[in-house]
Amino acid sequence: MLNERIRELRTKNNLSQATLGAKLNLTQQAIAKWEKGISEPDSENINKLADLFSVTTDYLLGKINSTDTAAGEKETFPGAAQEKEALEIFEALEKMGLLNFKEDLAPQIQALLKFIESNKDFIRVLSQKQ
Image (cartoon, rainbow, N blue to C red; front, side, top):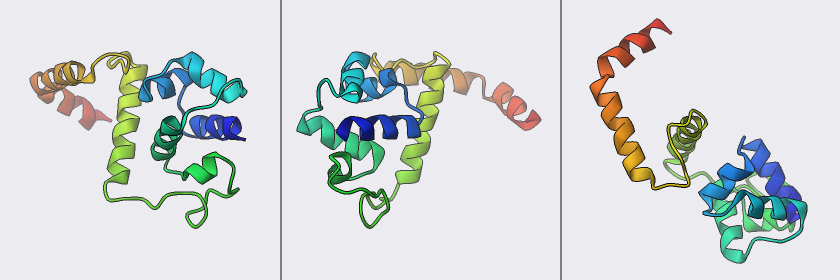
């Protein structure tokens, strides 16, 4: 059950095994083993998965069947929408090869911000054309 829930939530959130692994500081192979039922995440990683996917640990572990708010889904917290949007942006930047979650993000983000600042007029013109 746990392996199926992890796979379901990962695919529902359009994450690759490698991206999920990077978010948890694990390898793609570790995620693959979880999804195949070869191994299971420890309690710390179960909590991280629940937080990442905004579900309860009970849902992940199959103790409840529904993901509705009353049964399985965590109540959203202030800033949840912004956090989700930020994750989507990070994932898009990773797919474009502009960020690498396996390396320290701080210098990568600083470089992106510097690029955006030095090219903001050009970026503004491009965004107005769309």
